[in-house]
Length: 224
Image 1 (spheres, rainbow, N blue to C red):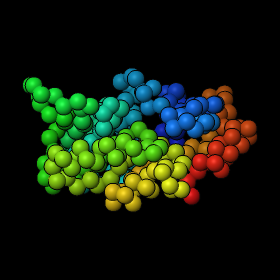
Image 2 (cartoon, helix red, strand yellow):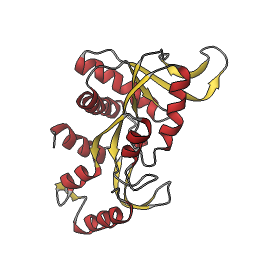
Image 3 (cartoon, helix red, strand yellow):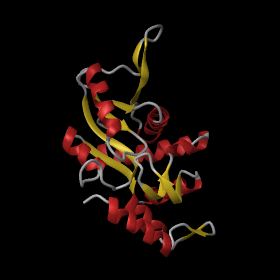
Image 4 (cartoon, rainbow, N blue to C red):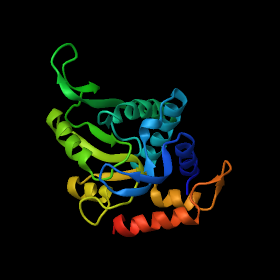
């Protein structure tokens, strides 16, 4: 496992973004872990987060793209932080773009924030986590309505590796449905591998009991 992935797992825990216990997800599923990117709230956290995303995007897609698109609302700070980090780490000045939930009809009119989209632009979409793929269903039409762009891929922070609408995980479904590449900074499998029976800051976050709960969750909801 790459060093930045290990650091990112610790970063999620330190930022209170990744938690273990008993949680009810938006889907109604009962999960032994929960990831909430809304807990990144400080400047130093967003700076680090942007760097981790930039490294993962660079590993997966290189530097040959023009725009980083972050769907509203959580994708807005993600796209801003990551474009800054990409410039600092790789010397490539990527544009950021996000959508508004409602079209603005005065001043800076339209549905987009940040850069305009132009025909031929190569776009990477950035999100926190994708469980069902619903957000991409909303995002794709917005992008295509603005210009004839080439969506290079999607990058999320955590691949939960559970079923979407079929027996496959949501990222695999997106690849098949939209013909785009997908990637994640880390997978849940990597999180478990790194934290299982590991003493981190005086705590063992994934002990035998928690590992059993996670295994049982994936036995029920894991992707094939």
